[in-house]
Length: 535
Ligand code: J2J
View 1 (cartoon, helix red, strand yellow):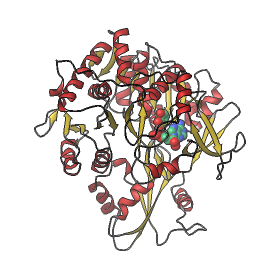
View 2 (spheres, rainbow, N blue to C red; view 1 turned 60 degrees about the horizontal axis):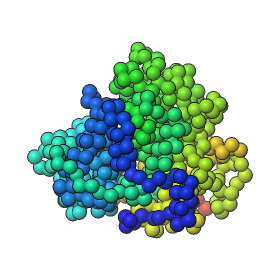
View 3 (spheres, rainbow, N blue to C red; view 1 turned 180 degrees about the horizontal axis):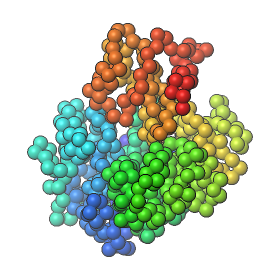
View 4 (tube, helix red, strand yellow; view 1 turned 120 degrees about the vertical axis):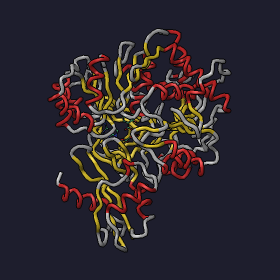
């Protein structure tokens, strides 16, 4: 078993197996089964190119053979930073077939994140585009290579003189079979992070396939489903709730879209007769606006999933009348627990709640400061444990002490209310994080980067309300010498911080408000900026 992975206690693992949740096969096997069951159904369409299940498996196996020749083996970690493309799907399945673990980086990550993932996961390889959306990943790869000695191979999707082109790796000779079982770790997903850098989340084939199975049932995904992926596909949400993997599980078709912009997505919905999309709230707002002036026929849409951040009631109310499809709220986390409103729920529930857990075996507790359960319909901290919620972050024993209770409940950091029927309403957050339209940013990470600037004496990063994104990043700074906003932002960019983590606003202060215990009062800082922006 992968070192740094926290196993479920024996008796709970046995229980989940006995209940039929964990079936013992891998994600690679899932694709193999579909290739036999429906060889000629289109699995993926991306920018004019389509592969059937049989072809997708064949391409993934050829690439796996190429990876194997380079020496990539079971349990090796490979940082994958690819946009929504066919090669993303082939790469990820090639790694699953080998039992190697993709580390799911996002295209928006930069030197700061990629070098950390490569170092912390002791990655053997790094896979990226050459250039994407104007950013030069080949240059980034050169920088990463300098600081990540474990990275033996850098593979780029495109032509490259310096590194290996992925195109050259598809082999005709068969890959050597590798035994990958359900209890093996399938990949490392990224946590939103609350302290410093993102924690890595090890998910096993068994438990992930269980979330696919239940998501497919709840979201009514079938072989007729045509799913348009518009969010960065490596995120846990578009990957698995029900996401591209859920669609593959059901034998449907995934259509790739490069951005969530209505200009790109609406024509695809019409041409490709898309039935299902998964969005974050700001994208819904943009689409509601675009629907007023754009002419495309979107009547094929049956379900619009919305999650990643709180959907306002006002916006939720507009979805069904505007798009003529069912709204399905989803409240999930890369660590595990996923909640959905059900397709046949009352409109009231769909609009006002974030759904209920996908499994009856999910244990949900709402507790107070002392970990004591609070009455129904009372706000409290959400703790959870279940057949697909991790028991610990990868190689993070100290952090795990804080993030999990002694009996294995994950402290989600979300403030919720749960009603008599088990439906959850997210009411707030008790983690030092900004949720910028679904992208999570650990305040401490941004603070540490700002503190590295000589003019910054002290800093506190908080969420600032925003009509469109829900939240933006505000950095309150006490400076000890002259510096302006532009210089600080350039400084952060030069350090290779992902663009979405760069503060939207900087506020200068002479001193920070303090709590009774003499700590910086972020609560007061949030109120201060809330008053200023007046949202
Ligand atoms: C309020 N807050 C939400 C919602 C997530 C499905 C859907 C989303 C994610 C995800 C995911 C929310 N309303 N509807 O992995 O499989 C906030 C909570 C949560 C955190 C997790 C999936 N949906 N959130 O967003 O790991 O604070 O996963 O704890 O990125 O997003 O973030 P992440």
